[in-house]
Amino acid sequence: MPIKKTPAKKVASKAVTKKVNSKEDAGTPLSVVIRRRIEAQKARFHANDNISAFIKPGELEGLVDEVAEKMQAVLESLVIDTKNDHNTQNTSRRVAKMYVQEVFNGRYVDQPTLTKFPNVSRLNELMIIGPITVRSACSHHLCPIMGRIWIGVLPSKESALIGLSKYSRLTEWVMCRPQIQEEAVVELADMLEKKIKPIGVAVVMDADHFCMQWRGVKDRDSKMINSVMRGAFLKDSNLRREFLALINRK
Image 1: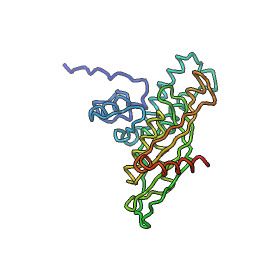
Image 2 (image 1 turned 90 degrees about the horizontal axis):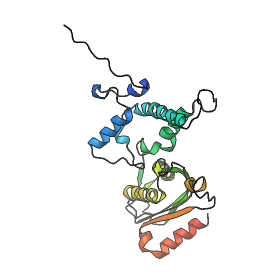
Image 3 (image 1 turned 180 degrees about the vertical axis):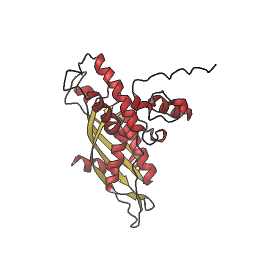
Image 4 (image 1 turned 90 degrees about the vertical axis):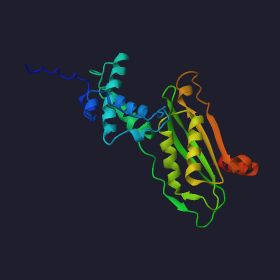
């Protein structure tokens, strides 16, 4: 007598499951599949971590589908009539695309290519880049963080040099994920030290936090300013003073 096959369980979104290729993952939400890959490597996946190494080609589109489906459930739990309210009929998908493809995109895509040039002229003078406009989101409430960053670099004669636009691209990549400002500037300074190998690097960030201006105490005038000083900027008070004086003129 032939064995009757039990039909596979239906899932809410076909678009999500079609992005999962392996048979053992069929019917499993894509986010769970990605999470399992990360956990199998014992890697971290905090809000401000980049997880692009664990995402396969085409899966970001599937992730948008899954987030849209879950965002729709959030809107329904907020008692918003998305069927009859023309303003919110496509909100769930718009929000999903915004998170995955824009404001949190630094989590899901590879680090931008930073073409390095040899320091042929053996430059070892202070360079300042900024202000670089930054847009991020607070990890606590996912409210916007809007601000500016200045980067100071003191190259050695052996340091690598990178194009001016690359500082902005790297900064955007770090900030386009849920962040805490104190951690974001440290992460950026670490990357610049690793890539350029300068005598010193300095990062200063000045930002508005909507988690304090839009909600909570609703203080519209408060900002947060913090800095990271490495190498010569930490040891040489004159260099540090010069850097801070120059950025304060802008």
